[in-house]
Length: 284
Image (tube, rainbow, N blue to C red; front, top):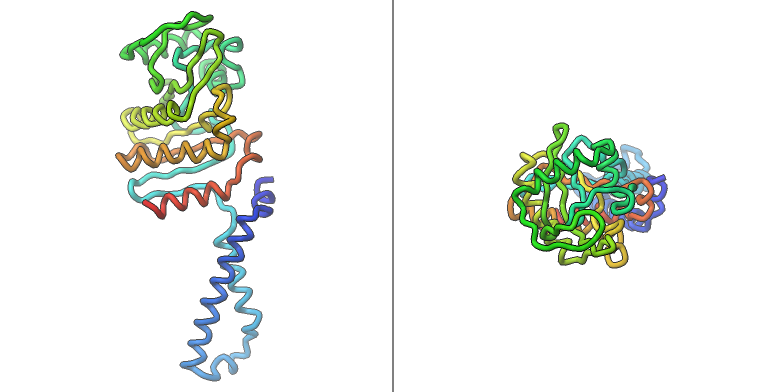
């Protein structure tokens, strides 16, 4: 369970000790001052201070260190980042869908059926490839093909970072190209491309979402080939940073919700993510 795992985390116990000792020091000092200006009052109350002070400090420390839902509100700009475990396609928000520069959609030989893009075709379009292809072509009508590749599937390349925005069933789906498919349909990417793609993604979300929340998977995993240089913990921080930096230039939307698959949750230090979010708030 997530809770028991977090309670076994060294960060929890380090925070518990830090907050507990700080609270004990403040309470002891306050009690000492009270006794200085009102001598003998505590004695008449017949209170077991030796037990009350550590207990009050412990309660405060547990309250401050307890693993709450991972989220952080930022006042400037007015936005929020949250990290949840669940199903991306069950979120009541707009969604980010990662794609390749050729915007291929056929499963399973080109696009893995279990990938976010494969699930997009299955869950949102009920395997209607023609319908999704038409919507993508309409979204890409104003975009320029910059190159071609000889391979099975789509052959026209769009610039990496291209975002095809589809409005389907009252939701916006921001399909962002951050991987490049070669002649064998193998996907590759790198940190520079990923950062630029995220920057263009947030620009599009800012323009098209009307300020509404957007949910995104952990970008850079799966078939992109980035998992060896960008482990899941770093990928989450990367996504958060790109959103916060873009938001500081101009507000993107009311919330970025990062959705982690249940099978990936055990690989993530949730308390570290919360600590990272808090540090970004403090530095803003």
